[in-house]
Length: 507
Image 1 (cartoon, rainbow, N blue to C red):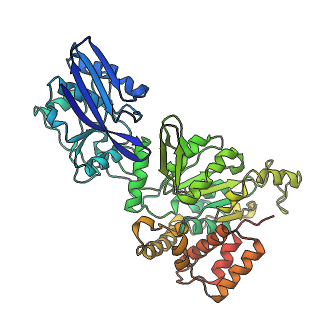
Image 2 (cartoon, rainbow, N blue to C red; image 1 turned 180 degrees about the horizontal axis):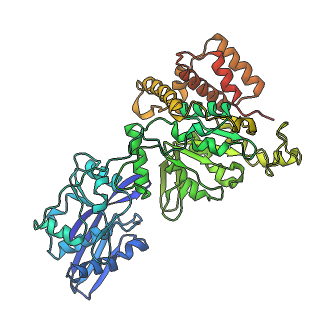
Image 3 (cartoon, rainbow, N blue to C red; image 1 turned 180 degrees about the vertical axis):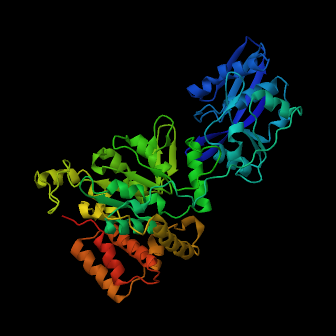
């Protein structure tokens, strides 16, 4: 007898349908799993055997063959335990096989028969809805699946509970969604009111938040670069509904969703400078999402930027431009979204001994030149805002806290983002920008239309500062954001002049 149970496999954020085919046949007792299973899937045999024993059942003295189809696709993860166990129960005629064909099943089995949490419930639930099926998932993740409206969900705590429910001996109530943390609840985030002095840096931080621009702070140790960057999330606008779903799907695949609640706040990731290329870009044996994907629609903060490995920094060039990261492996080619706002901080030189007046390294220009050369010109070119942050004066530290904090700045940022949302609403959804930093091609030409004086200023600046085509367009995007903060429909020369002020000077 052959029984089929439906489950899924994850290729990046893409969900692939998998058939778990279980057959009991005559012959010497054996339990084989075929279809390119990895180590975790192969070990399902022992977990399933122990779980069945825990509920008072034993494997039949027959040849048990489990085929995971399609057979040429690598199967990874422990979520195949539950569909394999259900297939065996159906083949043993303990549960009706016909009841299983309308569900996608995921779950890891403990040795006592309880069902443990697995990664990827939210994208699997979306796939189940698209396939006109229900989903069977662990009880602890029922609230996560419940965010997909119109989906039939069975969320048992154990294999015995699930078998009783399918046989009609027990009724499981459908799970309810878990309330996420309110997006406007930012009291736990660091506040800009804590920053004394550095008014120009605060202005640049506001522009970056309003337009989603990449930012680099360059300054001596103790000037407040990291402090400023850590306060960026407190002024960022709220996630849009479609953005909440994008972020939550990635975090579900990484197992980072807590208590089944969706991510309502923009991610903030700050990896250490010793992080490897797979840790930042994603990859490894199972091609998991990296820090740049976990920061999707949020902030990726890279402190001590030149201390990162050169290969790591170069992997950022493509995703910063395209908003996605492609991981090529022999078995598969996986793409993760990576639309991040990169904020970086660095010292002017390796030793950090900078004269407070001249801003020149005390050990000579060679120290500074070699240190900053660790960052390639193409990566610098992709950074919209560059600011030399001066040391904080003692007179600033003795001042009372500033009257304006994150709340006041966030209101201006949100107003600018509302203007952008309304502006881009008329464009097709497939190429619609979420903010000014994402505008490209014809869209940028339309939103950053320049008058005669503005064109002349841009042409002169382009020739004087030797701006590349990319830098030229990024100046336009920043100018558009500054105009939005001023609630101006047209870009004026003062907006362009301020945007040019924040370009990294070429030496």
